Amino acid sequence: MRIILVKFREVTQKYPIVRGMASYTAIWPVASLLQQKITGKEELSYMQALRFSLYGGFFVAPTLYCWLKCASFLWPKSDLKSAVTKALVEQVTYSPMAMCCFFFGMNLLEMKPVSECVEEVKKKFLPTYKVAICVWPFLQTVNFVLIPEHNRVVYVSICSLMWTSFLAYMKALETKRLEKGLKTKNNFQTNERVI
Image (cartoon, rainbow, N blue to C red; front, side):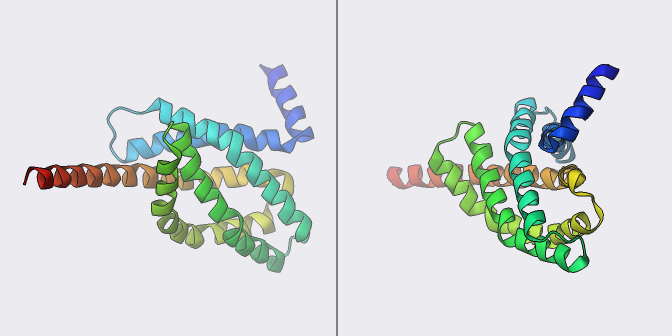
């Protein structure tokens, strides 16, 4: 076991993106299961957790890593002014893209048609983004001022445990509402035809 940990440490020091991918692969499914438990779901969906793991580890971590590298290149200082600038720029560049990709990508992983994926993005983006701009600028300012660059993806992944639980909640909550709305609409159309 010790040999595996030593090798993992060597690889993550040589390729920091691997550390972020490993942490997101573990943290995102935990957040999904946490959300399911908090909302009182009796039977946990491990397939949903697997989708969160795949999406977090193989999409979110690499894109976040690239964004953090670009931000560090464009604003190399670790002072408060640069940190606030990076955090604000992130809220108008990376965050909107990340949220749209989350809703679209998770639906694709559920094998839903593209039209449903797009519809979910349209309905869920704005309410989710409103919450994000209240949370992430502060967390990212701390990240850019206090956290060493090689640990930034890991720091964000820890912060994202609660954020991902919120994303899972938004996805599940809206899905239930959409299903209720579709059933009501279908019943209304059926009754209309009968009349």
